[in-house]
Image 1 (cartoon, rainbow, N blue to C red):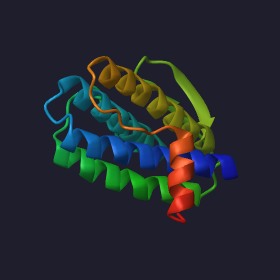
Image 2 (cartoon, rainbow, N blue to C red):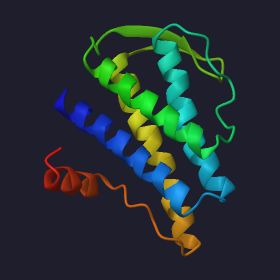
Image 3 (cartoon, helix red, strand yellow):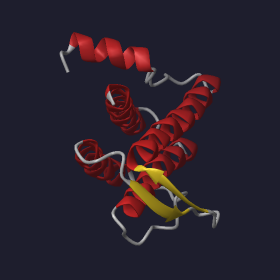
Image 4 (cartoon, rainbow, N blue to C red):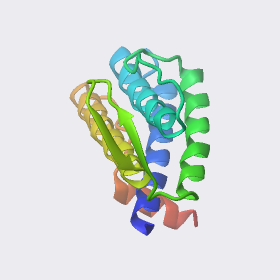
Length: 151
């Protein structure tokens, strides 16, 4: 349980670092905007599944910077809300591929964390190859940051 909390908090922090990076350094880069949008739209789709809502289908659209910020703030609240609930509760769902399945809320949250890590890693590689500054969102950087700031 504690490790899931840490993963979720890291995910939230890392998303916010990249959103800030996009508004500062990469605002005109369509690849970075598309990847960050995909991370958040995928989170949104899973949250919609958890809450039994209709799922947005376009998880690859590019969102404007302001919308990324707003969606991230909404997701921060949802993550915290879900961590306080029964994370062992199992929900059934259908993926975009058409495959059906069921997973616990805890496993879905872990999936969202690793999904985000995967795509943020792609974003880091992309910025590195273009000799752009890199948004440092490694877990150990998060750990140092939170320890230094008593978060």
